[in-house]
Image (cartoon, rainbow, N blue to C red; front, top):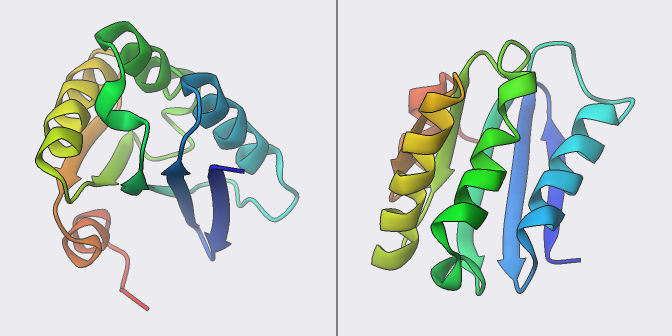
Amino acid sequence: MAVTYSWEGPLLRLKLEGTYEPEDVVREFEAALADLRAPEKIVLLVDTTRSESLGSRTPSQIRLVAEALKPHSDRIGGRCAIVAFEDVHFGLSRMGSVYSEAAGVESEVFRSEEAALAWLGVLSR
């Protein structure tokens, strides 16, 4: 599967790798939240560094994923960090952050996982 998740305490790490559809991101995020290991309050990190699909997404597809955060805003503390190395991924993720902020979730895009984790208040492993 190209979209996967893992739990590290309260940290939900959502990895977007290879090719996938926007609905796959939403589905895997919701599966992670339904996981019995999921704590009540979580910290969300989205890793796009190995995505082959993000660069070809339309604004409406990016909006679909960003707006999926809205019903879970309280649970994720109203924040989401995105890691994007490539310029196109960084730019499109910034677009997504505008959509997510309109949905009540503050999103920031980072070039390094360490910076993203620091912004989220999580120590790197």
